Image 1 (cartoon, rainbow, N blue to C red):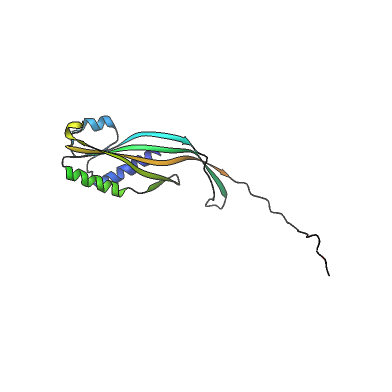
Image 2 (cartoon, rainbow, N blue to C red):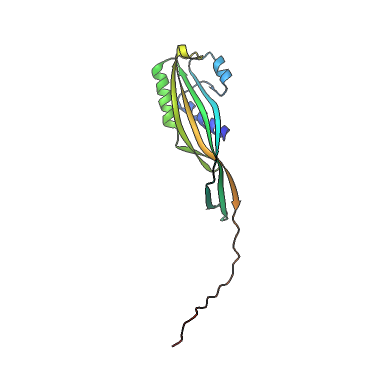
Length: 167
């Protein structure tokens, strides 16, 4: 899940206007001398037990039961840095606008939530950019376990109703 989410965010930040290489490691980000910069950094995972169940029919017509064993929330920090305040805001707003409500990961819908955005100025950051924004993006998915439901054998059923009179 982490790799798919990271690639999704890299694609969106590039579409929003980051032309340089998008960093995925904080050490390389801090060592960079660029003022026009973008980064997608993994922030962490959290898990919570779940017992949600869904019954569905797969593509082969077989009845399946899917149990969501854990809710999984994966967080990323996306950094956009720029020399000009208005350019940074423009890229940021375009990036947020490009985000979908969610993505499919292993045929499971994973919701995308934008959490917090922190704006930092040149003096408050290790980046060379004059202004930067750090936005936290959370992917809400889960861990699932599928099982096939057994088929009932076909059988003949005869019903006799008692108490009927042939009058």
